[in-house]
Image 1 (spheres, rainbow, N blue to C red):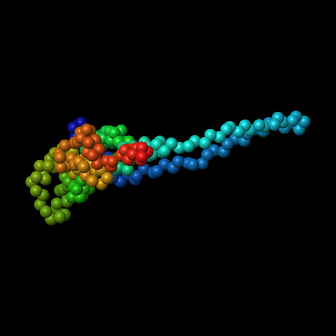
Image 2 (cartoon, one colour):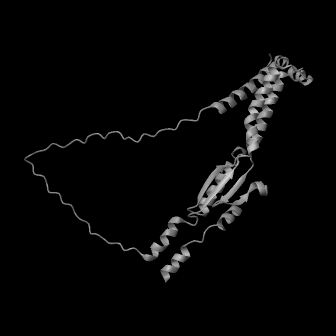
Image 3 (cartoon, rainbow, N blue to C red):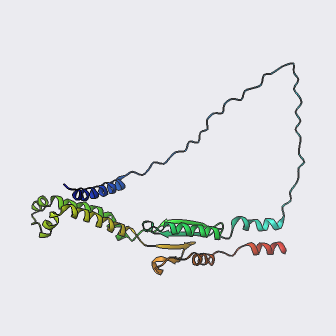
Length: 244
């Protein structure tokens, strides 16, 4: 067996083992953080001398200052603590298998900087149900096709079927055929798992859809879309109460 045949045999085998380990691998265990603290070493007590008088302890009492809250500062404080985006929730649902996470993280940082106090969550936007089902079936089809190429001369007679002429032509170059089947199957599985979505929701309402617009939103566009849906700031209302 020359090097080309070894490569054609080894590549599908490595891909097959990696896919099986990814499918049947158990989830990683959760790390437990111990809450116990090590016991503190005992503090050495100084020797006690009965004939040596101890100096009296004086506890100075600092003067107490009573702070009276400023009504103007109290009225403005909730707005300063909450920020412009206080109480607003933004969801960025994107295609995780399309390498859109970097864009989502950039948009998340931009929104948190522009609207302090806003809650931005990132979620995976799954593909349609038929595509999800086909993506799960694709590994089975790959294994079945490779098994047919390897042992088709025994499978077809047991089923009472005459092997088609295409089977013999594919079997003549079985290693190249198996590598092609595995590579095409992996490409099809990746395509079926992708949704191509980048959807933006503000308080449950859809404000931008890449599936509908067929493009990504710019940072300025997304900031304007979210800013137009923010509730009115209580700063002006609080200032009116203070001045009145």
